[in-house]
Image (cartoon, rainbow, N blue to C red; front, side, top):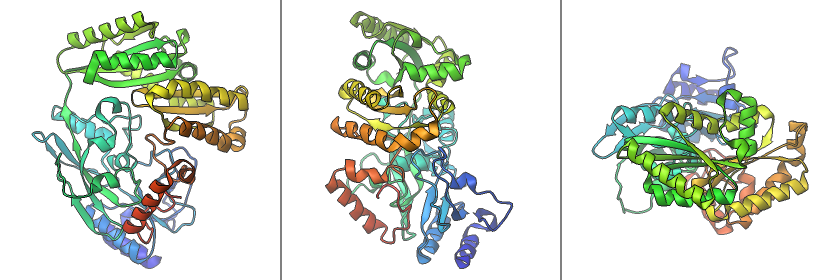
Length: 473
């Protein structure tokens, strides 16, 4: 292994190959996952600065039969970007490859390196009077390579789609160290298999994304935000249908939040002043982006809320008067996971269900969990506009969080995932599979689909050196 470390230092420079041999170096930021569910030990953390260096690192590791764990901002939630505990894996940190290579305003595209922080993409686009719409809570630290690797979703999927839908081309280093130059920026290319979509969502198991060509959009003239109290999840779905009718493509965000989830924010962050949540079991956060004017957008919102109140699916609502109020409402929504963490350890789920079936799923699954665990608390919130719920399970009041996870996590997961399957849903909507859910796929993924996935993995990574034990069991 000393020979490999020397080779890697020759490629990237001594300062960018970090090992435990140096007592002044702390590798915990690369070895521990964001949720602190797993802590591994790397042979080394390698930080290349170019695609050529990534290719050379992969070739050296392939020659030494050493596996590689690609890593961006290490904000993932499914233990997909940290090494195991053997001390034999290389963590390939992409954070030095963080340049915006080009912005083509006429083609409405941006070419960026994989280590570019998501918020920096948003800011670079905005400086050109354009919009890069991908938005999620970790945007100040997650990287576009990780977003592509997990096919991240976020709050504007209802209008712009997942990360997959925003990508036109990729540059990828293969498991053999070759470079696929696919940064075309084309919206139409029917010259064979779409390798781009094969790489997106593969979580670094098929190739290492080094750069991407991403779609841009004109900046909207105005974005307005509304907060509505609704009497049931069925009413929230009804409101979503009305929003599609009244706002059309202007509907860019539609979030649902349960009363208990918002109660945790009110409890742990009372300064945020959560509106309306005590009046109804659910609240909805809507965003309307308009290309005309604030007057037009506000008129649309007023027509929507009037129709919703007449239909009985909204009991009360507020519309943000300015951008500060709008950001405050979004901050409340984004504070739910933080408030839940303050409340104690919990069992997290990132699931998708057909929107029409979500009310029945929630009603039945809530009842099943309460039947099995009296007093269990359900932190339910998420992107109702695209059918994605963060259906989290908190221990009963006063119960020990660690003991609850130890005794109940596997049983709760099985109960929830069985329900997801029964409602024709998916056990991972936007967080990926990683190591955390890899063992679940044989139970909930079509057997033929799994066989095809294994065949693709064997073909593209015959040595199994790219992020082994992630995604595929």
